[in-house]
Every structure is written in C-alpha cells, then in structure tokens.
Length: 302
Image (cartoon, rainbow, N blue to C red):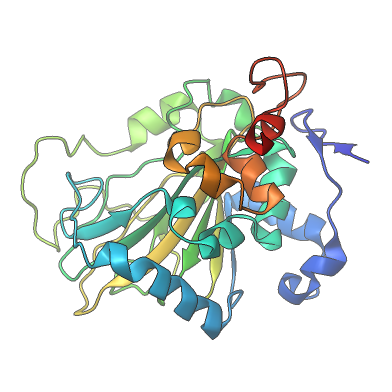
C-alpha cells in the first residue's frame, strides 16, 4: 500500500518508524521531515558501526591505491574520487539502500527514485574549498516552486567514513538555500572558479556568513535536499578525510552516472533487489524504463 505526498503528488511507501527508531532519537519521522524541509539538511550521529566503517575503507583501498587526483577545482586537485561504487563491492549497495537514508529519499522523491551517483571522496591535506553548488543543478527546471521544501528533484546522503571537522574539510551548507529561487542563487554565488588559477588552501572567494560547517563523527549521516547549496571545505589538517555520497534523483530524471553501464549486468543480478531498482532495473509510472516492452528486471533475469 502506498500513500501520496501532498507536496509533490508522488506515490511513496509508508515509513516504518519502528525500524528507524534507533536513529530518530525519540523524535517522530514527521518532526525530522519538518526540520529537513525547513533547513534542507539533517544530521544523524553514529549510524554506522566501526566494523562497517572498516569494511568500507577496505573495499575502497584498491581504488585509492591508484591515487588518481581530481581533474579540476570542482573534483579537487588534491582529492581522490572513486566512482561506480556498486560495481566494486556489495558493501556499497548496502550503504545505498540503508533504511534511514532511503526513508527520507523516498518521502521526497517517491518509491520510483533512482540512484543518480554513488562515489567516495577523499580530501587530502591542502585541498581547497569547492565552489558552491547543488546536486540537482543538472535538472534545468525552475526552483521557484520549492518554497515549502516539497519539490526536490534529488536527495543526497553524505556518510562520514572519517570524522569531518572544521579543520579537515567538513562539508559546508547554506541552510534554507534549497528554497531559493533561480534569481536568488544566481545573485548570491561567487564568480566561477573556471579560470584554473591555482589557489592556496586559505583562499576562499566564496566565504559566506550564513554558511554552516556540517561537522560529523565517523559513522554519521547527513541527508541533504538536492537543491541545497553546499561545498566541500578546505582541508587545513595534516590528514585526509573520507566520505561516501550516494545521490538520488526522481524516477523520471536522468542519472548523473550511467548506472546500467557502470554496473555490469552480471554484477547487478547479484545485488539486493532494492539496489537493482535504484540503478535502473525498475519502472517509473506508468511505464518509463521498460526494455523491449517488458520490465527490465525480467531482462536481467534472462
């Protein structure tokens, strides 16, 4: 049985608050959602166990051993990024379908939502601040209808694999910016960093008094609206910091990463069913996503 989200008209699965109780801290899901709609982000401390964190770090080690740095100021010239995570270990599929994150994702985007991207980001010492951006900026629909926080085109999860601090580059957010209009965004952000000028770790052309550093202990989770303006902070510490960010989009939107190519079909067939649905083996009503006239799960099984 499904319920309808009055804010966006999408069909969503009912939330099992009992299953989320370990993380809701005696607050109702509706109370957390009200905060989410107002601020555009929420943080839950210590969601992942130390064992899970160790498994995730171990699964990423072969990719990080390649030490591939970012290609520009946005990716981070002193950062390592690992893409296509669901093709690399089943641990990342479990993270992408974590019930706490998915409860908020599905409440905003509906049960037909998709995994738009899933990547690990390691900021090394000396990394500079990112430009401000939103994760659903590739969807060129007007932002003006977002006044009440109910028209998100995407939701992003930020899993702190290492503690994120003011010194090591914790993600910075502008609370409430998911409710800004296109004009507000255009008039409020700094000039493009596309001039490729090499900046020092202390340089910050986009400093804002209304920005908040989302510091988190290892194992914590931040969930953010796709329209929330945010950026990776500068790493002024002497050690790297690591996050994993699954990013979700509405079922009708194009994913940032082509998941059906990023995850080979033989790998996809071994994923949990919900993970398969999220990477594209699913249907957005009434029939978006079919393959040769049938449900893509049937083609995967063949």
